[in-house]
Image (tube, rainbow, N blue to C red; front, side, top):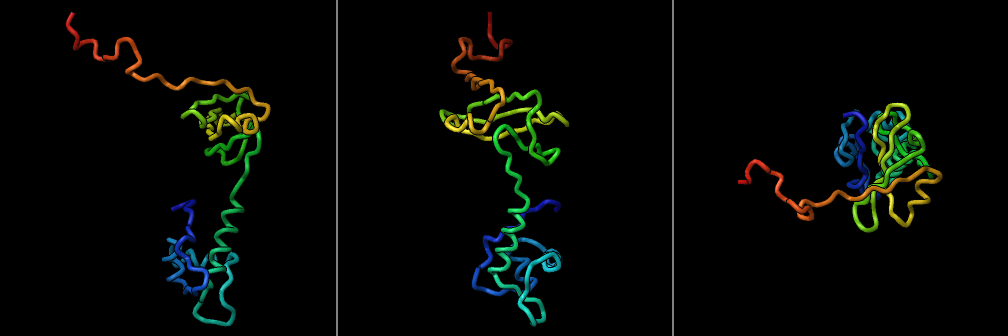
Amino acid sequence: MANRRHSSRHVKRLRTYNVREAAKATGSTPGTVRHWHKSGLEGVAGVYPLIFRGVDIIAFLKRRDDDRKRPCGPGRMYCFRCKVPKRPAFGEVEFWPDGPKLGTLRGLCPDCAATMNKRASLAKLLAATGDLTVSMRCAESRLIGTPKPSSNSHSERG
């Protein structure tokens, strides 16, 4: 499973774990835990087989997650296809409201033309968009609000 995020939620801070226990607590495999040890996870010194402190496992996974984060900043959105934050094509985004306070900013990636999304509130819309041109979209109308709610015209007699 590529790009899987391993969780430290079930790791107890004051407990020690062998490789198999650490794998079970983080939802990974023993081979993954051994790889983590080679890439910086500190084990208890002078002890064989390998034993890891819970505090060290939690810190290692937090450090790994923090290294992966790429904050976008104002006027930039993250493209999942290119895997980098970019400025949307033509400097334009659309705001689609999801309720009275929240909504989604949608723009196009200038390189791969994929749709980029970013959640934003109306109160912080200016800070999220920076100098981008924002067009506000209306929420889709409900079927009940239309004058003729039936979409099956063939079922009506007339």
